[in-house]
Image (cartoon, rainbow, N blue to C red; front, side, top):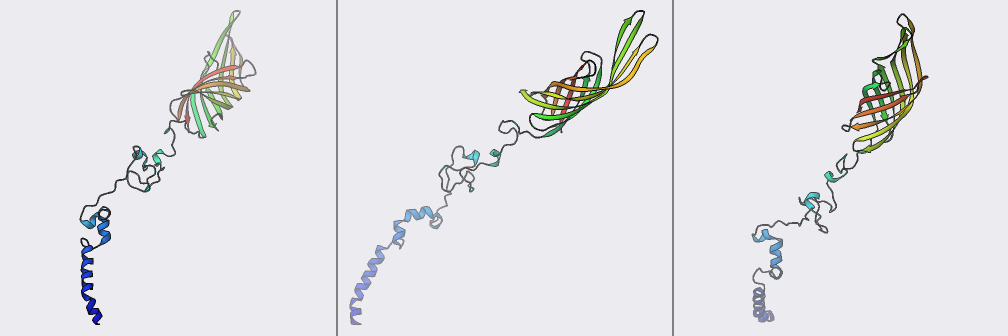
Length: 261
């Protein structure tokens, strides 16, 4: 007990010296790292919080990406996004966004127009088609037409005149179609198929009817055409087709408007 009392003044002096060495904040580590603490915890020291600014690359705003190598991988809006993230507006492009050709889609189409059955003659009709395009190059179509006029020829024979009148009642045909692009909005195609045509023929003189009949003829039909795309769904097409008859062949020219469905 006496030994404890003997050393009591030394204990008091040591305590006082230790308290002086820890003066200031009362914490040795706080004094040593005071600047770092003020930066990390500004609110504790009464200073306003400073919002951390993440560096953004010049083109990061357009793509929403961070500077390469940034550990947080945050974009300009501070959201968690991968550094190589590309927004949907720059993703898979629909038709025309990247300037490339539109992907082909199978489709049906129809045409409506006029036809001159004998090029240069007065045999006209109305013509329609219905087709199916299987791929970019191959398709098929059916064709039907109705005659609207007849062509007459007068042939002098001695003292009398023979008059021959010929007209197309109707015609149907089926074709295979091979298409090929040309330039700009123009494309070409070739057709080959088979037709059946109903004709009306009348032969008469000044005094009597010598022949009056309706008959059917059929045979090979083939030709080519040119098409101009007005817009993605509408086009104008010009056709030249040869219809093989039992007699002389008939070369027809038609002009029509085509519409995709």
